[in-house]
Structure formats: C-alpha cells, structure tokens
Length: 226
Image (cartoon, rainbow, N blue to C red; front, side):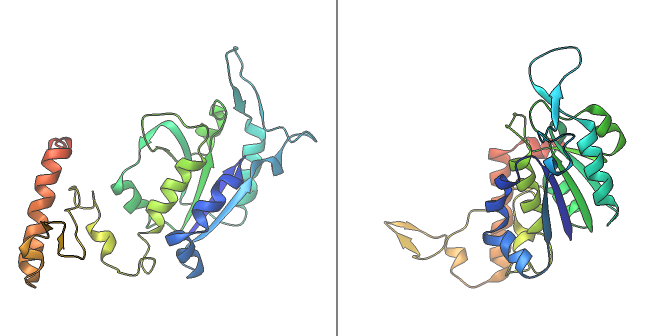
C-alpha cells in the first residue's frame, strides 16, 4: 500500500511514521508513506499557501491553487483509490472504515490547517472526508497519523501475530476482553482460572462473554446500533 500526505507541517509526521509498528511496516516494504510539503507548490516567493477568507471572519484559509497543483502533480504518477480530507466535519472514523481503507492500494490524504481548505478543492478532488472525533485540532497531521496507524497495522505481515488485529476492540462490534500476563498472582489478585487451564475452547468462550459484558457496561450504544 502507498499513502501520500499533503501537509504544511511535514515535521509533525516524522515521529509517528518512524517508530514501532509503522516503521516495521515500512521496513518490510508493506507500507510506503510519503509526506509532501504543500509549500513546494506555493504561489509566490514568500511560500504563501493561505489567504484571508472571502466575506470576512477570523482565520486563514488554505488556497485552492497550491492544493490543486499538488494533487495534479501527484496524480500523474499514480491513480488514487481515495483522496481523503481530514476535517472535524467529516465522517467519524471507526474500525470498519479502517478495514475498508486497508484494502486500497493508493491513498492521498490532505491535512487541513488554519481555518480549513477552499471548498472548491473539496468539491473537485476529495472522495472521502474523515474526522477522528468531535473536537478541533490545530491541523490534520495528527489525525492523519491516527488513520494511517489504524490502516497500516491491518496489512497482512505487519503484525508479528497475524491474528492479533482480528481480536482488537471494535473488529466484531465488541470491545476487547480483559487481558493478563505473569505473574498469575499479583499482590493477591489472581488471573481467572479459565486462562490457566489450557483449554482453548473455554478460553475463547470466556473471552467472548467478557467482550459482551464489557461492551454492555462501557459502550451500550454499540448494541443499540445493531
């Protein structure tokens, strides 16, 4: 999979993509990520990519020309399955969306900044708008990192245990069950016996029951959605 990201602050994405699982995905050649500084396509020598909004009001708006030129140039090399704009008013990102995006080959992500981007870019180029929550960040870079991480870990071969992602919270519309490790007795608190008895079927049944119970207690809305 290849993911290109257009941003005015590419430095914000250096750390998330160069450590842990994302680094492993890149090193294995399973995920290619490239950040593109929008100022490369700035309209003047002052590296301008934003301007005041028509109609007045606080906050600058990312101009259409630099973004259009950037997208046009990147599209010469590859056809994007999705051109995503990270925005607070987009579709709320969830595990189902991550699963769907993990099946794509080429994705382009536009990171908003300032007051947002000229709406003509949204209308002409963007195929999907994503929000990671009902709050506002300084820019779309951190949100893009969240989306890329959620997608990247689903790619076959990225995780050491191929089945690990299948049991994450939300994969089957349930929260993950509680997990334990050594010691079996920690300051008088003991690991549930079923996990120590070596019966995979009983362990699976226990985990499923715990997932249902935890979801009902913490996220009853997930049952209401069904």
